[in-house]
Length: 121
Image (cartoon, rainbow, N blue to C red; front, side, top):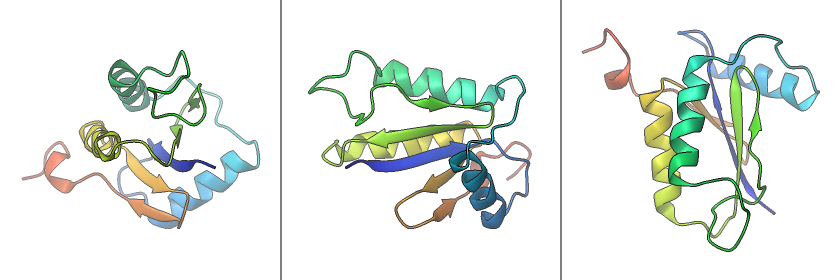
């Protein structure tokens, strides 16, 4: 079993309900056909630079060796025994990239911290 998170590049002001609706569309196999959002690209490059997704092995935090990537989101299936630092890095990078974090275990939605949003104080 894995611990599943996803990061979402939705419009500013997206509500938790918007995120849950997008998650459900993904689960139903419906994905937006467009170029990948630059926020997702930045996040993917940063997280896989710290925690390569291949090769899968005992030193990787991933329960699934290849991350699910779509134009507007990235799904992260983590080994439940992965170090807490991996979760902290995911949270930090999601904030830096202005991505919304979705916790699949309980449906919690965590917007990017306002302090990291452009134009905020």
